[in-house]
Image (cartoon, rainbow, N blue to C red; front, side, top):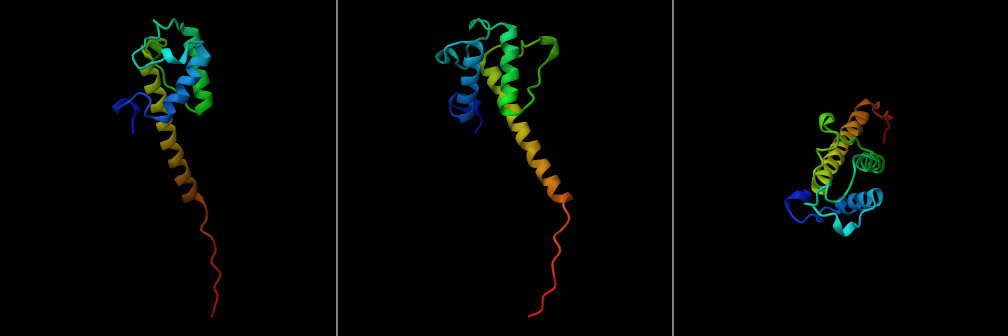
Length: 116
């Protein structure tokens, strides 16, 4: 269930993401709503960068950024959450593919012949 289709907090990952953001940028969690802009929250580019690094570390993901915009792709808290969730979903899909690939590369177990 994508978070953007309903209530902002309907995806359990949103609460964890927002808790990390609140801690990293020292902003009250209650102010972190979908439409709150990074600018109006007073989050500078260094804090935003450090927050993205922390999110990448906690979720073991890579959050792609548009280099030319230098963090401006996250205009709102909702934009940031959407990027993080998309990166988590992508990593999950890739990990499933990696596990399937690992299974295909394993040799088949030997079956010993038994007679009854």
